[in-house]
Image (cartoon, rainbow, N blue to C red; front, side, top):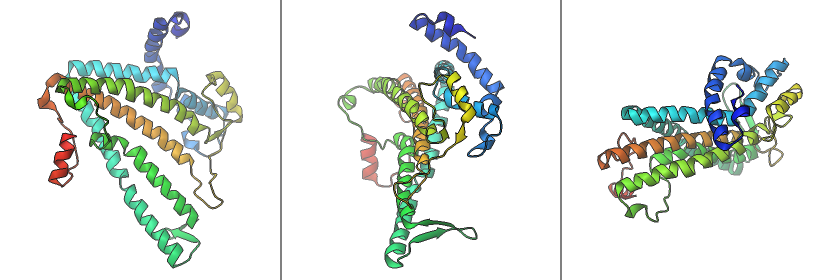
Length: 315
């Protein structure tokens, strides 16, 4: 549209020009998916045409771009303003976002059990039966060195940390450093929560996303994309673009899928960003409706111990 170039002489002009162009960018992306998603059928395979390679480079560029930031910000503004007018809609957003966090967390929390069971199997196979390899599967077996299975335990731990973080937040399981929070009134607490979600959670997730996004793609494709590359430069690099998924381990026969940790970093950031929005909405609604709305629609798991339940409620 060219608004950023014509209005970008000062900070206000740049901000509102990007915000207006976000409408155009959003609908253009939705109506022209092939320009940035044509590479999907060729994941980790040969990309036959330059257009497909260019679509992947566009996806990489726009995944951590100013344009994407303003599209997400525009959607947040529209949803928030609508929610301010219709509080039932905002409560619905809270329930959906917190339900998503709980659902993902409850699924991947089972990785803790898998980690324990796999460690037991490794000990028995290595110490009791003295085998060098472990096979898993029926018919088509998946065989790896014992050291590979041992190092893979770190991946289970990463699954729990990255994908259960917002589930733990919803359940109130994170450690809170309380200096003034417990001593202030209910509505003041909600104000602190609103400010904290917007001034701390959101900026932190944006920074992690900007670093994590290119950190991920530098381990998936060559030539390596850089955060400092312009779209034109990345399109120029697309001629030599090919998949180069990182498969280097810390030991010769060890776990060799460390690129998955980079994927988890991006997923972690997205989950925390969504939870920051949910936390802001919940804090605003509880601030507006008063103490009677505290914990409204909150889906918390029962602990099972009355004393522990009371301690968690006080916390």
